[in-house]
Length: 200
Image 1: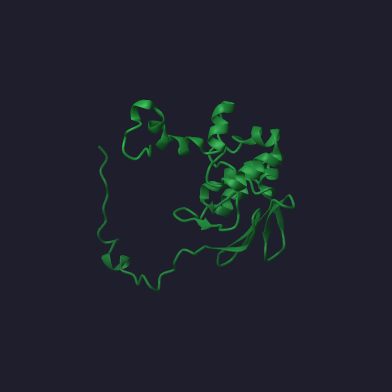
Image 2: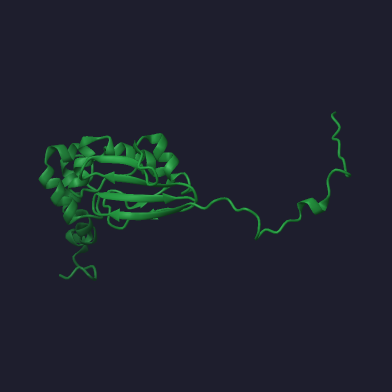
């Protein structure tokens, strides 16, 4: 067994009593939404020494990080995007107008890279079509089949994600027939004609 050497003469309790208010704090990082609309956003990250802006302009196809002090521009990559968002550990930024990205988390870097790196997904964003965060490619096949219909369905049923499956499942879900038919199903059967609430 190894023995630990403790020297009481070298260490004093007084050395560890400090004024916490006067101690140097870790520099805080502030995030601020500079601009947002239905497809684009600009986010500013400011520390005591550095001020940078994340510019995601899906409508223009421009994605970069700009250093506000010296004007240097870096293209958005997964590495520098993770670095930009690294201080969003326990918090998030609410993007109220951006349809394809409702909130920005530390973990949003992969999703942003996926959307901005795919021409079909950026086209869906430009048409205000919601994109699944879990499976971004999930609705691409429907988009490619009929863009106008898919856009219209997304406008009519924004809270209902377009379903996958057979044409019967698709038609039932699009028109909400399952929700409408479920309460009336017991009233259709002859044995339930006299059930209270069926209205016969």
